[in-house]
Image (cartoon, rainbow over all chains, first blue to last red; front, side, top):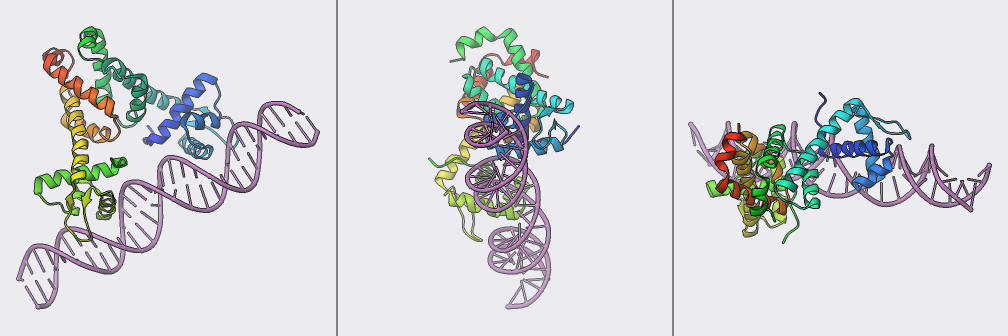
Length: 138
Length: 138
DNA sequence: AACAAATGTTAGACAAACCTAACAATAATA
DNA sequence: TATTATTGTTAGGTTTGTCTAACATTTGTT
């Protein structure tokens, strides 16, 4: 198990993974655009992720994700999606608001609380959806 | 309405407020100890908070909170307590785990989602506590 | 009051993230 | 293919937040 990534590096890794899954190839410029950062910042981040062996990367080379990187990326994306579902379907938040908060909280929420949110959402969906829907949601 | 504080400065302000309420006086060393940072770091933070007129502070002087600082501190603490309640009573998390996550998330959660969490917790407490208690919580 | 201990401040470093501007390499197209 | 456009890299800055070590001030104790 490698040392924990910073929020920023998690964002880069997550983005790289999503682009990779979609295009089967990753260009630094796409990462920059997706995250709204400069090409220079992306280069720096790529170096750090490569150092941690989460991506394959070399000067002017194509970028790809390692086995380890994929595992780490999936974990983050799983948190993201679970939070998204909770915010939208349990709390009734709008897509954009839910996305914004999931993007931030996914990096700092603990395993324990994350598991509880997931379990709660599941239980809620199965048992209480309609009741809450009319009384609580907007 | 002043510009938004960083997570770090919010932590300092929150801590100062709590110490102030408890002791009616605030010493920098207490802030350092509460946050687990060096005295030097606290001095820096105090300067920044004073610049933003959230605390009264001068070299070697006693520290106190301004009207504006108190309002800002209360907002943060309100978020903290609301998250704490949600984690403990809705999700059934342990005190320490709930505290840790509240301390982190209070700085980044949006107003919209925060309000929804508060409303949900209230509604849940009033209507569903017992049912969830046995089926969901640990 | 004098000394010692505690507290507060400053100076100087460092790490993480970001930026812009200049330059290098690759890709696209006339 | 030669030229232009795009993309990638580097160098050098900035901001935020932290630290340690040295020094200044205040407080507490004989």
